[in-house]
Image 1 (cartoon, rainbow, N blue to C red):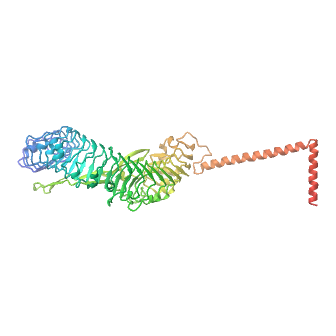
Image 2 (cartoon, rainbow, N blue to C red):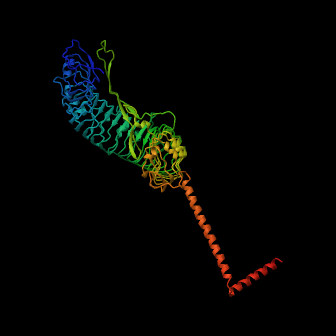
Length: 629
């Protein structure tokens, strides 16, 4: 770690052009900087500096072009007393500043990059920013700005390419009329209080607009027609109040998220193609009708959960081999699970739950890539939107600074997040971001619960060795629990509850050391519950509704006739059959014997009918002799 003396009264006789003291654990600004007059770049980021932002750096160094103070603890930001014409890059993000100078646009008129994100700025959006005619990058996200955007800002910043105002409390109708944002490539205003329809203020940017994020607001109306004519590849409009149909051209974007709205009608067939793959998040809407066969072409991620779709799951055709996440839960899909599903060699998450699917589970599902052996192949579950905001300046080259200094604000990561049920709850799993891999990159799961599936559980599912979650609950599955499930070494959640399974719980499942949730309640299982490893942690509720299961954690004691094997229940039934047969034999023999004794007793008495009986017997014997002389 570099240590810098901050209290020295030493007055340097040299003049620096670049001062980079990044990540030096500074708590005070080094005193020697007070005597510098020719600085063009100062980097004091990632320290422990607090108090006032040093405006004297701007006043003393009229040639200063880059000032980076991010990730400190500054609390006050005031403008210098003079206009600073040369400053082009100012980064004060991730501090604790509450007051944003209203006159910043007049004091720093030639700014190109301004980053004030992740502070505590309050009040209205500063209108003087509209005077920054060269401003190309503006990020004031994660603050507490409120009110409407001033018209002077909308019409003044003619050079803006990247605008990020997300996570504030800005309100009003966003850009209802024409604006001067003619070069905008990325607009990110999610998590605010904007209302009304999506206006026409971005029409002039349609040829450049690449990323648009207006999610988590209160926007109404439909998607305007001009959006279909843009260069958009990333469109996020989730969690608003938008309605109507969706233009077919949107379905070939690289990233489309319109989830959590009121869109309705039939899903259109995509208009065009995208060889790089599409990621479509259309869940939590009111779409009806069937899923078009061509809808799945070029798809990498498809989420149609919680709509009102009907019909059968379409036959997967042509270019669906690269799909990695398919979520169709919460619809009215019918029919059987198509065997074509088995050809999806890159699938990681498959959710068909809460539909009306019937038939048996295809045994070929073991061909899915749901963690089936092989080398770990992490799909790139993040997408980087390259924005043309690449700022570079050459600074004075001395004997110590020989490389150009470059400021990069050109990449916006769009992190993939999907919801999937594991361990009895729905969780959001995030993919890879600029900070590294996410849990989604290691998640493999299959959910077929709450359908009308029947038949036996395929033994081959045990070959899905990296599967972490399997849910087959609330169906009509028969037969026994496959002992091959012991091959799912990474399984954490296994739910087989509410079926018609019989036989015993395989002892081999005790080898599943990562198992956290195991539920076989409400079946017809019998025998001794396995003990050891994770099975010692499961409570009685996981076995309820199986009256022939015994042993801990239930209160039923296993007697000598109870066996913890697959034929335990059958042997118990056979024993019952043997008992019934013995009762039948004894009853029949007793009845016959009683009748015979009764006849013999009656024959011992002298009465008319006894003599008549003997005459009949004599006549029968005489007739027999005549027939057989």
